[in-house]
Amino acid sequence: MKKRDLFIIVYCIIIVLSVMYATQPLQPLLAKEFDISITKASQFTAVIMLFLAISPIIYGYILEKVNAKKMLINSSIILFITNIFLGLSSSYELFLLFRIVEALVVPAILTSLMSILANIDKENIKFNMSIYVASTVFGGLIGRVFSGFIATNFSYQFVFYSLSLAILISIYFISKLSYEGEANIIKPQLSHISEILKDKKFSTVYILMFCVFFVFSGVLNILPFRVKEISSNVSEFQISLLYLGYGMGILVSLNSRKIINFFKNEINTVLFGLVLFLFITIFLVIKDILILFLLIFLFCLGMFTVHSVSTGLANSMKESQKSLTSGMYLTFYYLGGAFGSYIPSIIYEKFGWNSVIYMFCAILIGTMFLLVKRKKLFDNL
Image (cartoon, rainbow, N blue to C red; front, side):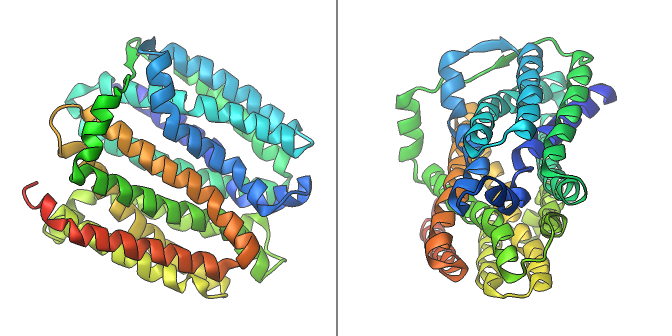
């Protein structure tokens, strides 16, 4: 693969993920600006997660083959326009409408980028996929920190205008891509889905990632409100710095093989990640912002350890239908993210932060028991 093509793909991934998560540290500000509840503000992130979860089904039935580059350019143009309108939106309803439009095109962009990355250099697919994962993590990190900085020093509107400029640059870059092939989009069959879900190994991994990403998204989505609750003087930029721990995902995804070798096998590694994730979640009841900042690093370490290893498991347990099994993994993953970005905000609004944390701990303990109970199923992998 040409270095230029790899740079373009990585840049596009980073920008799209920045768009996805840019609203997260701004949610208290947007809630105040539009005079809405915490629950409604949480929808700005949850809606994109939901469409990422159901997009394999939607796009699978609408499109079977489409020119990846063409879909990438057209979807990016829509994303460019919607970000401008997000900056211009003066009401909650308009803002949410344009986020829903973004939710429709973001999966198309990510599907195109993944397809191009997988097909442009077939000899290095595993390495390219690790680059994809690391780029998504970096994009999520940059998007959050960037939006907090811009909102604090300029205004929240400039966050979206700046992202539009970055998307415009990406459209120019995409036109220079050398890849002209098609994106093969899976059309899932209900019988195949049912067959995979009946396999306890797959259902265990899918439940695991749904629950883990539910907790992860829930914490990161409510965190800005929690910090404002502890200290109302905290700026959006200071809130965004709490997400620096998200960068642990890059280190974990690029070193997952070494981590697995250290713990002897995948399930031991996942259990370690779960225990760490649960242990740190318990301590998130602490009211010190500096300690919360440090805890988020370990919190992200636990989550990304589980995620990176589980991704590999989902792709290695069945020689046939790899596209479907990995697509279903992403569906459960993002469904967990969508529900986690919304449901905990309702509980937080009614019962407070500690109640949310206790709920998360109960979910993680239940998930851990399930994995321990079914551990022997994975012995022959």
